[in-house]
Each structure stands twice: as structure tokens, then as C-alpha cells.
Image (cartoon, rainbow over all chains, first blue to last red; front, side, top):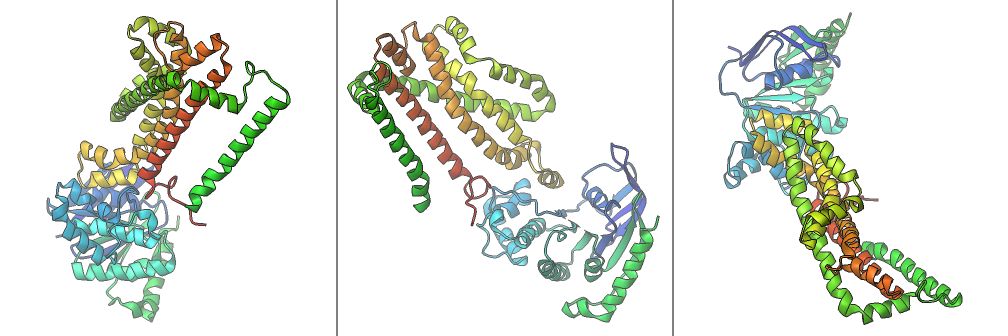
Length: 244
Length: 261
């Protein structure tokens, strides 16, 4: 049984834009699914609907359990500039009414997981873009989500930082057994990270094809022939999806 | 320390040059003291009349600070009320604007007639002038919260109260402090203007009243001395509020963080 299933989902914005139509997709527990598509194909809309931000105009969205903690990472880090790193990470727990003292070890652990140990008292503006994104990820982790939704989280970062964060994210995913839904417009990033890629096409947004990947991913994978092959396949699917 | 000197030294040099030029000009052209006194004569007047000027300064400062406090408390409360719903804001904001655009000199006589206690009347006048920047800036600040942060809190199931305390209030802080800095100066102006209007009644003895009184007696150096005291008070209020602003924002807001060259 999938963790979350979307069936025939439609989304029409108040200005009349038809963002999604007849969209079907399922996310199973433990998967790393990428939503890949050209800009304007509604990938972010799908993510927001899964997160419960915004109403469906049609179709249905079903969770397998009532208890589903969601972690959300936006394209920009979306931190509170007036709060320290640890206060930013504390936010989800604070909303749940967990006392600071009780939350402290969990905040510490989340910071360690993303490589932020020792930065608790820094302010976001004192950090680099990559470090800020780590804070954003730590904030998503601290609430121990069943599913992590990421909306082009590394799109604004330089390539070196992006590769490092890709590796760190994969490592966390492998050790924590999360479910991740990852929105991206990069073929290379999606192939590197995902167990499954859903290629989307635009106007109206829908899933046009699916690519299942089963390679063992590590540092050597990025330069392997298998990786290049899969990138070629996915690129072809994306090109098909973008045909009028 | 170097930064501090760099900030204080240039305006100080300009001040000394200007005062010297003033003194020299007054002496060279033999300008009579009852038209334009030189800085030295003004300083002598300040020392001589300190006994009467100082209590007046206290009266003006007390009115100014009370008005500023009232403007801050009510301004923030009203802004918070405005932030609760667009309808409340739309319904009442125009009246805040009306209060702002009506010149205080024009309504001060009315207020002085209506309110028996002169000190209260002056306080109300100064408050009217001081409160708008705080209301409008704080309202803007409360409405400027990052939308993604709002989404995030919605996702975590935060209550309205939590959104307000955790996000909206802190985001409004730089805007509020900007408003406060403007209001500090305006409260003093409001207090002095109201004192001028009430001044002929002769009940109050603020600095503005001293200026009027000295004018009637052609004590021009004393007029200048009182004027300097008002200006000095205004500068002091500005410096204090700037320091508060800097202290509150120095770690995180672009306006207060030093830019590395």
C-alpha cells in the first residue's frame, strides 16, 4: 500500500490557470522519488498539495495512515533571520509545544546529522548558502518526518556545494529510511538521487512517464557509464514530455 | 573605536568651524545682540538662565517622553489590531491618516480648550504627531512576513497566536524601530508646537514658553539658548533610539550589520 496516493488530481488557480489535470501518482514508503519536468509543469504544485498547502480542485489525495509527519524544504532556505541556527531548527518542535530543554538533544542531533555541529549560536546571515540549506534540512529533520518534501532545494547553489549536499542527503536517506519526494529540473540530479523518476509535462501538468532506477549510488556512480546511460534515457523521456 | 571616531570627528569639526565663523561674522559686522547674538553670548545666557531654563527643559522632556511612550504602546496595539484582519485595517486606517495629515497647530487650540489640564492637552497634541509613523510602519512590518515561513508554520499546524508571536511580531521589529526613530523626533516637535499654542495662557513653563517669553522681553540670547536645548534634546532622543535600533538588530538585519569591505 502506498504511503500517499494522488488519483486524477486537478488544480485550477483562482486566475484560471490549469496547473494540474488528471494527475496520478503514488509514493511508497522508503522511496526516493523525483518529480522532473520543465518549469511551469506543476511539480511544485504537486508538492504543495501533498503537504496540505492548498486545496485540490478535483480528484483525491489519500494517505495510508492518519499520522503523517511532513518535512518541507523550500527552494530558498526560508529561515527566520532574527533567530539563531538552533532556534530556527527548534521551530517545528516549539510549535508542537515541546519545551526548549526537552528539545535540545534533538536539535543537537539534527545539527550533527547535517554537519552543522558547533553552529547553533550563529545567525543565518553569517552562513554560506549551502550551510543555510543545511539548517533548512535540519529543521525538516528535527520533527522526525515520515516523508520529506523538497522543492528544488539545491537549485540556487553552486555545483560543488550541490554535489556535496546530494551525497549527504543520500547518506541520510539511506541511514534514516525516509521517504523523499524531490522536485527538480535537473536530469543529472534526479538520476543521481532517485530510486524512481516521474517525468512531468506541462499545460496541464501531469505525469507523462516513469523511470525506475536501481543502481547502487556512491561517489563512483556519478562518473560511471550506467549513470550516463540513465541520464540519456531520462533526457529522452523529458524531451518527449516537452513536445507539444 | 576607529569607526566611532570616524563618525563623530567630521561633524564635530564642522560644528566648531561653523560656530567660529558665526562668532567671527557677528563681531566683524558688529551685529547687535538683540538681532543675532554670537555663540559665546548665547552660552553665557545658557549658564546665567540655567535656573529657569532647566526646569522648563524637564517639563518639555517629560511631555515628549510620555507622548512617545503612549504613541508606542497605542501605536503597536492598533497595528496589531489592523493586522488581525484586512477589513479592520481598511476601515480604520484612513482615520489614522486623517489624524496624521491634519496640522497639529490647527487642532492644538481646540484640544487645549477641550482638555482642562494643560499638561494632558500638550501630551495629546504630541501623541497625535508621534503615533502615525509607529502605526503605519508596524502595520507594514506585521504584513511583511515571509510567505514560505507562513506556509511552513501552517504545515506544522501552528495556531494563529503562534504565527503571530513566532513570526509576525519578530518580522515587524525592524519596521517598528524605524517608525519609533521618526516618532521620537516628532513627539518633541508636537510637544513644542503645542506649548507654543498654549503658551500665551502662561500656565505651563516648557521650553517653548521660555522662547516666547524671551521674545517678548527681547532677550534674544536666551531665546537661542532655549532653542539649542530643544535641538540638543532632539538629537539625544535620536541618538538613543538609533542605539536601541542598532542593539536590537545588529546580529541579523541588513540595516544594522556591518558590511565587510
